[in-house]
Length: 230
Length: 230
DNA sequence: CCAAAAGTGTTACCGTTACACCCATGC
DNA sequence: GCATGGGTGTAACGGTAACACTTTTGG
Image (cartoon, rainbow over all chains, first blue to last red; front, top):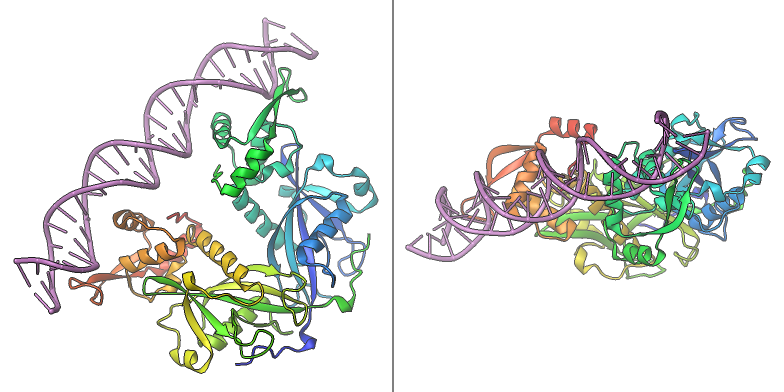
């Protein structure tokens, strides 16, 4: 058995593609870029780049995201590696996908203007190049799975949010409707949130109380590995 | 924004490492190889190889597995990609891990003799080279997660098996004890198995009926995406 | 005063869990 | 005849799901 029979010629180009999710107007959004170079110039694509010698995959994904959004400390998760022989017609490329959750409000709007990037409703996502549509599907599945077990959804919301926003976010991600009272009861049972004295007045006359994550409790619960099944 | 600024020098070596699970003696097992070359000669390692130009990752994993076990049609799932800068001290290598479920009974014993490979109790797994211990942990987590939602565990068993074997396999994977009656009731509610007229006489005097998967129902249920929460 | 969203508890139902005894047979 | 594992059903419990009315206030 020979395991170390590798050839330098078998080295490949490694790309990182990011499925960037956002949430506003009660919809799950995805950030896409219009390619300004061949092949597939003018078509929509995930935001991506190539792995560099001096970084690992997580660092590459972070760099690519920071470059396009100006944000640091973005929540990210590796999803899958894609390697079909002709997925990139230009050159053999393996791509590792990451999904990212970003708070659209924090996201620097200037960069949106400087770059040919745009938020799309996930439900209204255009045809993407290569196998990027598959990547989006797989990323969504993983997100749905993750959020059903860990309360990572906060990453999509501003620091303070209403219970209704939180619920709508879950509904958008899971593509389902949830009962208002059951949702609140369930979420309160997790004991993760602090009620603030502030109200959001933008969506009703009465106003809705804003909540925020109790970071101490949040960290503790995550470490304990509690179940957050919604 | 420049997305296509890749350099040929950033190409990397891509490895595939397989976490091969088996099940016998009521224990979850893992197949490991003792390295017969430097670096880390003599240490235990996952079974792996390098991606070749003309194949994708799934094909590479299949090839590596077939080479060592002689088996085809092995159940496999990609787990994760590992890319820490110095994970392989010899040369920058990114590794994509796969877990595989194999029926140890079908697995050709000659290959075990020809090669420095050996089955270990997962609980008794030695220190492995590089980040292979992490790979095993991650693979086990994914397996536990998968088997809680899809009935893939059959892949570890011979074609015909007793309910007790099935239960012990779940117990081994999930590292928990299950109630005999509840397990059988639950599993029967999935309506996936056919009772045969044969009995396994090896573990009791009365003998235990052998069951087999009803392939038609199995395929249908998988497609429908039914829940198989144990 | 009315429209529109916020906020709040209780009950019925169903799935999960806990649990014990008889059966068949080889020795 | 007895020790060993095989096979079976029911009842209590707990979590999930269904459900409606009152409150607030800007216009």
